[in-house]
Length: 345
Image 1 (cartoon, rainbow, N blue to C red):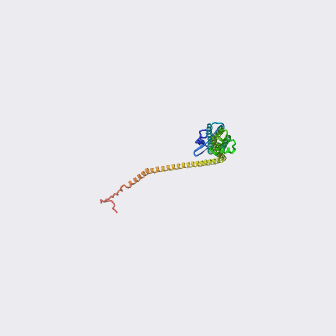
Image 2 (tube, rainbow, N blue to C red):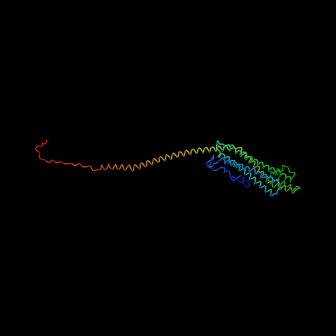
């Protein structure tokens, strides 16, 4: 999330850990998940601490920047002034870049608060309070930085006004303001340059004008920085003012997602149970089919053989040759009749 600002310098950071590391994969004790990523309340609090650390670095950078501006107001060589102006630009970019980064981190933490807390728990109001506090600290830091740059602007203008009066003692405040508000190569600068030739103290006037010309470029940049910070302050003030509504929307969305996940999990369990019942029924039908197949095979193997044996026996009996009845012919042969034998009737 770190990015270059201004001349390519990176914003100050308390560590090499980016905000994305506030979200950690950890199956188990996560209080809420979304998109497959789990967020713990303790990681959320660590993210708050990182932002606090960066805001502390912002104030330290502001102090360093103030020291550089004060050195610029002292009598120094042209080379030293050039080096200090570069240091001012570099330090301003660091502080401004860190403030921009903090703003994005706070918005990410607001989203993480929805994942890290659950409805009806004490974590939710605690997370809201933490976000409110860090939002106010962020707004105050931007306001302090803006105020500090405005003070640097005021001191630089007063210093340059004194130098211009060396060049042209009769210069009015309007004429001086016109030069300070004009581009470095504008008409007011040429007017004061013409007065150098007419000055009774040519050397002093020439040195004073050269210093004004060198500082004028830095003043133009400082004016732009003050305007930039004014816009940043308005943006941050709006962000802090709308923070509660934004957090409410995030919490509501997180609760809706959690409800959908719970409903989906229940549906999955029901589908699993239905699938199990289907598998059981298929097993029962498969077993029944196997039994029927085995019974049919046994029937055809054994039942058919026995039937053929019985049928074969019956066929053998019926196919035996029918005995032909034997006709016995009895031929009567006349014999002598016994004397006492009765005569046939």
